[in-house]
Length: 252
Image (cartoon, rainbow, N blue to C red):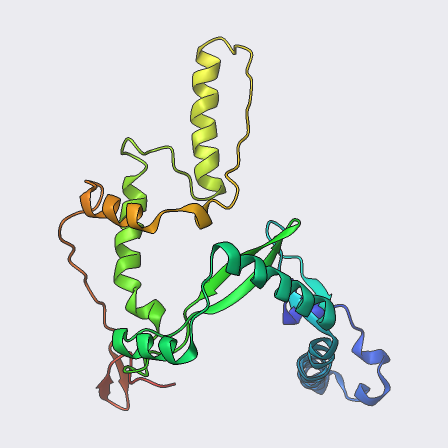
């Protein structure tokens, strides 16, 4: 990762013939700032309009599971073959083909927009990711993600309760893991540091095997979810030419 400042620091603009200038000490800072701005615009154009366009012509670029900030490049023909084989595999176990007319009818009746499927490489297989950023049929300014935001807030509240409830073994990130680990180490030292044995386990295709009906029944009966939720919406009011405008109508 780099910023505009760190990137420009790697170049000596005085060595570029068309950016050289002659000026006295009082005006040199002005010309230097102008050259930095011009050269930054050139680099921005080079990457956004040339490099990225060339990469898109020949490669599909994507991240990879557990590879963090690394980017992987697949030739278009190779990626098309991988997509075809992966979707065929998903059709056997996870996905179900439906007629386009049936899909449109379902979306219209329930005011839901179809999701978009992404495949992220993971070891020797792929992880399917669904995104729901498309606009809803009857509410053009909203998406499925926005429609589900209250449900997300309820589940987020459930997540915080799981730390203190009997289901408190759940961890959601590295900070949670370290907190559990530090507590375990303290208890281990208090017990005289006995010899330890470790067993690792991974459930293959864990989310694919979750019974949705069982999950719904659990959420309807569990004491972890409150019976009622009060959703508070915050509105931002800003002044623009002495007129109070809301967050939705305010434009810079």
